[in-house]
Amino acid sequence: MKNKTRFLAILFSTWAVSMVLLVSIPVRADIYYCVDGQGIIHFTNVPTIPGYRIFMHEGTLSRADEYDMYIREAAYRHGVSFSLIKAVIKVESNFDPYAVSRAGAIGLMQIMPDTAKALGVIDPFDPRENIFGGARYLKKLLRQFQGSLPLTLAAYNAGPNKVQSLKCVPPIKETQNFVRRVMQYLNRY
Image (tube, rainbow, N blue to C red; front, side, top):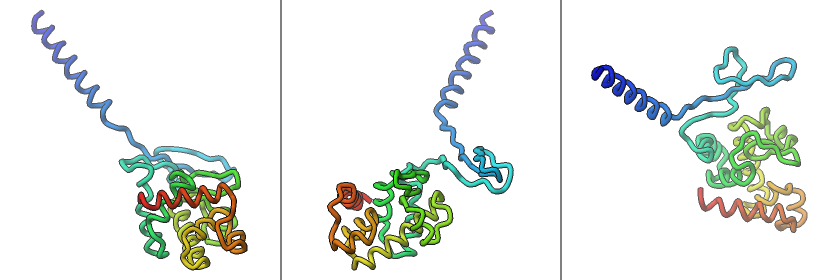
């Protein structure tokens, strides 16, 4: 009887330690999506056929750092500062690649569909494409506004024609807040 009790105690202890270890190990899984010929979106954590694209990447990076590799690459390729690109992403989408604004701006850098098309962005929900398109657009605006960061940011938010005609940050509360917030985050990144 004594051996049976001891055996059960060891078995229970082993089980308890196993449960604690199991609970403390984070479970991570990428989620993929695919749109079929009928326009139906399918999600899975184990893609079984070609054509699935990453929907949500689970990993050890925080959401704010998840796209740093793309941001660095775009910054280098387009000659725009890493900090500027990351600050714009923070303010525009808070690092949500599937964000869509009321006005229809899409993805991490909240690019309008016509602007995305003009920039050669095929899938604005693809983080890399969106970041590269947004970086190209920032570079274009920086040139247009002779490197003036406030005017470039205002043009990114309100449109270049409005800023060009006024030659200042428009008196639009949303645009003024956008410029202020990006400038604040610029110093953090």
